[in-house]
Figure 1 (cartoon, helix red, strand yellow):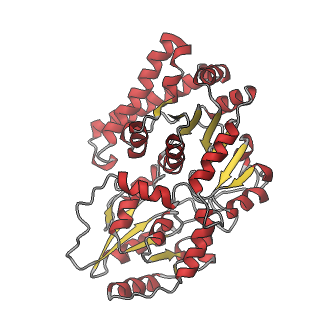
Figure 2 (cartoon, helix red, strand yellow):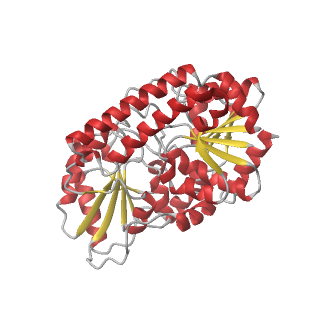
Figure 3 (cartoon, rainbow, N blue to C red):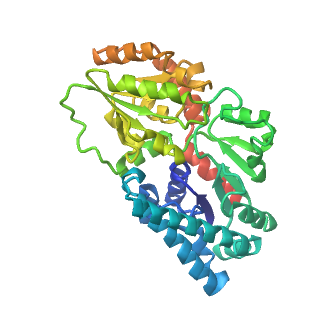
Length: 423
């Protein structure tokens, strides 16, 4: 069995295409969620895999046979605690009553306490070995995760003891050309997580060089392209994507704009970003929606009470379909928009990092609020020619999505690589 371990929205986005490809190739595959707080039942990609016959479950249910009745009771309690919290929060934290917020916090505290207790008492290397034996594991595939997260470390130790190869798959697309892209980043230990895996898959040479420069083991790293953004999966994803926008037939005549934000700790000028929100809200003839980054956590509150529509609960793909123009700071969703041949405005003035698409001239770089206003008004008035070329866009997509080989069959390469590891 080829086992895939997922934990959140982003890594599911990049791992699902690989599982789908292998299932179509009649290889035995299973997906286990290692994050007890993630609601796998409401994830359309995981439901799609289940409909194809792929086993999808929480890893903690798979440990059930070895650990007895006490484990079953405690597992039930911590999973249900997170379920209660998620149900209460479904309508948005800001809309909850005082009592609901209190129950939500209590459920979260209870679930976290029980889960951490069980990690220390139950989920060890011995338990992991029994699980791998029973599942007849041939290869373990994670995302680029730190071993200390969830139950990754005991699974890695068990796999090593049993000589089962481990593979780290992408959970995003690395786009930065500078070092230390996050506030407080240090060279020491920045990419240590990768050395715990036998093989590391990256989409492009940019990230391979970044890991190698920072002490990563070069011979472990393989460039295979982006499973998430390759043509084959994008076509399939468009078929299964649940849509909330009833009609794209907009009769208002306004320019439709979606702003895909980036998490603040990626050296974002937050104060200036909020000034930009206010600017956008006051532009005539332009409709702007804000989509917070999909990994937005506690900072979600910063998007409350904005003068613009917050569409955090909507699919980024559907929003790219809806929008005439996409605004980005440093998000891989730029790939979705560029593939659709729609205008992308890169708000370079809102962060201190530098990006590959800026370096290769594959977007419209905006250096100030004045430039942003002028660009949007010109697009509203019908400007068609972009200050970047299709040639640059194609060159960048070839490098970032296909690892420098435009003719690459990305999903076939992933399938073959993982099968060879298992053999």
